[in-house]
Length: 321
Figure 1 (cartoon, one colour):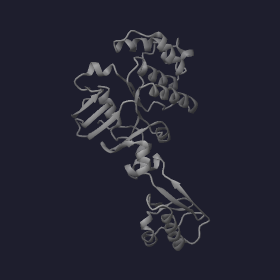
Figure 2 (figure 1 turned 90 degrees about the vertical axis):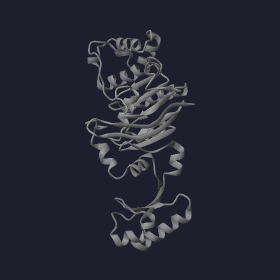
Figure 3 (figure 1 turned 180 degrees about the vertical axis):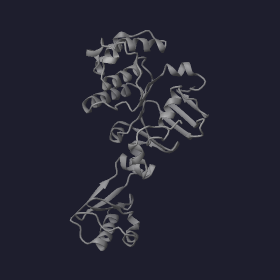
Figure 4 (figure 1 turned 90 degrees about the horizontal axis):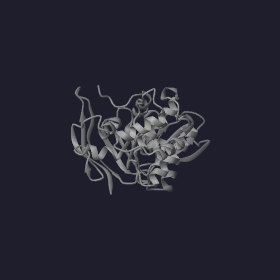
């Protein structure tokens, strides 16, 4: 069954900025789904539409077979969103925040579940403090607890581990895996692409409001990720136009140690030997050579273009004007 079906979703802001353009996406029930893109790609706009804080310009969204745009009340009770922004009443304690949030979803507070959330997210020792006394990482974890307090079927995590230290991040992901194994569908946006590759079984990549790819993670890495022959010459090599033309078949890329040549995915070992001999003809025998397979970050940067890394470092996300 499909947990979330998005069909031809578009969003154009009043200033003319098109944040989403004809995005269609199916998220299987029970999946751990990564939604990736550089800053300004449209991820937050999409999540804000799902959370009912932004209205779509056109398109349709179905949540477990219900029209999300028409049946807001039914759908909201089944969605939990961890937003990027933190906003709590500074005089409430974490336990009070979670009890109050339960009521917003039409649920009577389940204090056993609230205490379990506080314990699993390592907030139980701070449950009686006012939220203004919590650190940034604690508040981030309280956001996660707030999104889970009504036991949603779809959990949306928008950069949930920003500002969380490595050990706590690892334990948070262990908890998310347990929830996913128990049946929760999880939609994750993150700039930690190694986490996305490790955690998620499906992935979608968007850029400039358009969907670039959406498929199972293993399938994408098998069909899109390529291998490179990395040759060590002890420093950069000459990749002038004439040399680059000779190596064009292998899409040469400079490295600090020498050069990397792209290998075809289907030709196997024969491609390695042709690439190696082509490099030797241009630069001589290398000091060392090895094969490196692309990871998710490599695929992401290649699909989104050379400007993606820069945009990811600039901060901010969707430009709403």
